[in-house]
Amino acid sequence: MNTNSVHISKKPLSIKGIFSLTPFTLLDYPHKTACIVWFAGCNMRCLYCYNPDIVLGKGKIDFDSVLSFLRTRKGLLDGVVLSGGECTLHKKIIDFIKEIKTMGFAVKIDTNGSNPKILNSLIHDQLIDYVALDYKSLPHTFTKLTQSGLFSEFEESLSLLIQSNIPFEVRTTFHSSLITENEFVSMIKYLESKHFEGNYYVQHFMNNVPTLSKLDNSNKEIQLKNFSTPKIKVIFRD
Image (cartoon, rainbow, N blue to C red; front, top):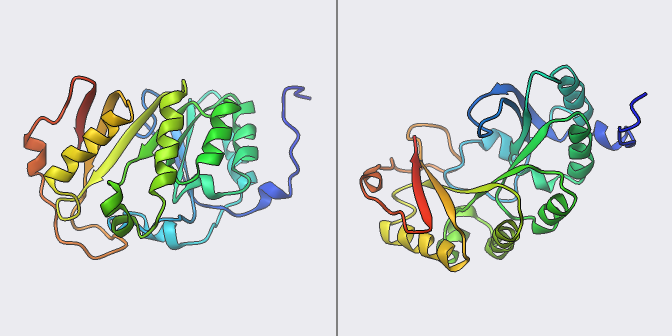
């Protein structure tokens, strides 16, 4: 018997909160081999969202099934990425991560920052090893772009991460019809005002893919300029 295991009731982890599972990736967790757990549901409805099936869908896989899969991947994978949807919405996320950590996996979460209370608990209890925080836009465009009023929650999550020792990245999906160049410059200035330092990743909207809303094509002209500052390096991802 493993004396280091955490005893958790099986009933809560039999809930089907997971939409799908990607068994292997080299791209989603920096410098680690990982799998991706896609959580169903989200509290935002971002106009450019690539995952409408996940955001609007119901869970198909229970937590216990994913844990069983992970037991077969000990020594083969370095980490687990919890994505979605929005993983922090799920009530049993902390119990789930505790089980993952007892197996020796590093844990990365992808989050929109809308649940700072859970994020704070995860940081305090040392349950996460890396965070990718989605920075949607500034307050005056946030509500339209995300169909939510959750900017202050994002702001609190950003502050929590800046004050913590957890490695994290800030990332933005850029659509030229939704964010102007001047607004993008203001987004960088906002990060500076919050004393963020490091890499700021920008991924261009992929044209001609299913999204939550019908959008015009986005151009990549912004990539031709250098927006980095002395403390923030702006990196465009393909």
